[in-house]
Length: 529
Ligand code: G4P
Image (cartoon, rainbow, N blue to C red; front, side):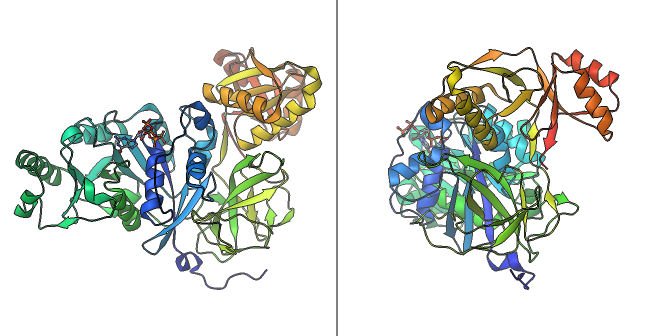
């Protein structure tokens, strides 16, 4: 396949790839739907009614898909707005930190953080924010539900500044809140956005917050309060500085209500104005620029059982450089194998469109039979590997007990499939036959069990394992590693790539073992080859 010669490949089809991060119930599903609606990707928005645990363990978006009857993927939604193509990636709405979510955030260039105005920053928002910070992912904040009784805007902004150490720059400001809510005001463009105009995107443009024309549209007391608080906000917070935002130091803040659609367009306009284009991706031996002509990408997620009748998997690849075309052959860096990608899935929120190419920042789904793994690098031939998609040392380890021994084969398959998806990590002790599963959050165990039971019809139980944590064991001296493994038959397991993992009974056990075995490195993360 001939390489694209135009070096400005990424500039020819500008993409903005982002995710929405939030605590469950802050309004992510509602906002996603309204973003798609206002971008023109779907025609009618109604209520998405799919609640409770069933929804949480799957994708929030499947609910939208069912409710709308439109063909969207549960993982990626692509829409156009203002001449740009936006890829919105779903982050599963588990309460617990999950590796899957982390990995999805490695595939985005920016994020929208949704906060419930009554609750402020909640635990999950904070964890996801920390992941974004690690990777310098810039964030636009949407403070949702200002139509309900909530906390004062200043209090919410101060909480962001104090707890997340981020500068804030308000883009819109609520006019009344809770029962007195009238709408919002666009501070940059001086527009009154009344609730009843929101659906059609109407607004009143004025000369500033004190403009007398506002009097005709707002009760006097609410207007007076608004003029005072918006005046303080304009004077008291820094102006929006794109550089500071892109470096992850400042967050533009949009107050609004997803449900009533107030400021959904302002959020879209903010993304349009500031969300960064695809950036260079870390890789060895060198970073990869999106403007490079040859195609490269990495797999950040594998989804099994999208169709319950097939055991096929879809690997989600982020295109990092070049112009991908249907039918291309790409090399899997880990094995050197060339893989023909004849039936890639492209994601559009409208009817599934036939698309033949993808650009840097795009996500493509690659159906396969388990060849592609999370962390895989694919290239046109170049010998490089993307870095930064680690496995995390599990904090909870459990032995898997099969209820019906006849189902051993099915259980193995289930564990392998779900480990591939990143639902849990699996370890096979060198001695003994029980599988050990490792997770970083307790909810992952529930998800794992329920999926094994419903998708594979295998009943299992988790039992306490005598281990507290795990560390990948590596060494520059293969003989030393072999000797270490042989000397610890009951405390070493293999991960699913056959890499030895030391299972420690306690922090003290780990420390002592490390002291006694200086030729061995014990790592809390393992980057996929
Ligand atoms: P999530 O994906 O982040 O978990 O949140 P989701 O969109 O499902 O919203 C959680 C609840 O908050 C829903 O109410 C939703 O209608 C409501 N909500 C979202 N945005 C707003 C808003 O701007 N204002 C107000 N007042 N409510 C909002 P629910 O009663 O739990 O479900 P439903 O029966 O309304 O669907």
